[in-house]
Length: 213
Image 1 (cartoon, rainbow, N blue to C red):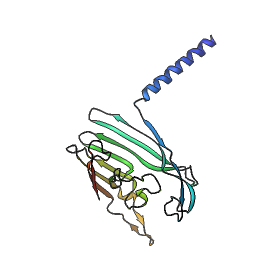
Image 2: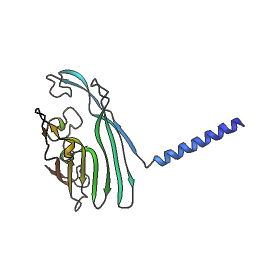
Image 3: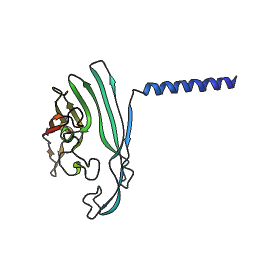
Image 4: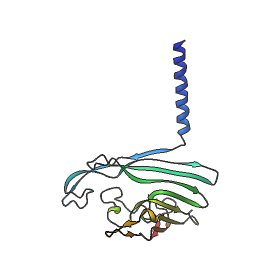
């Protein structure tokens, strides 16, 4: 009798496991990237730790989960949680903050995200940065290439299958600072705007143009 119960239990567990995997087939998408490089620099200007010599560099490795949940034919919830993995090297930090947000997506009204995300100024570069996610990433060379938290990001639908209008707004109160005299120093202009024409992947259109502020 005990053996039959064991076999029955094992059968039920196997069936539940198969059902769970089937249910998750259209669920969250887990992904990741591990990218290491050996770099030699005479002056250390192009290395992530600004040191000369030969070092092993972690080229922005990460882990994440993202997905969508359909509410109705017009609206769906979108989400993403992504973490930089830094413990390949001697930095001392295991995880770092990357794009993590919750939002709503509508085919007719566009997409609104809340949380941490690349500003639309940063995203306007499209696929221009051929050295992205390396020690020569444009993020390390040009100002304004920020991934900011406590903000809202909006992407419009593609207008006339050509133009997309985008905006980032960061909550001012979360960025207020105190100067050396102990007085509050308010941060203004906590927004970014962009317009893009074409397709950054050069698939739907064979051109891509963007303007951002």
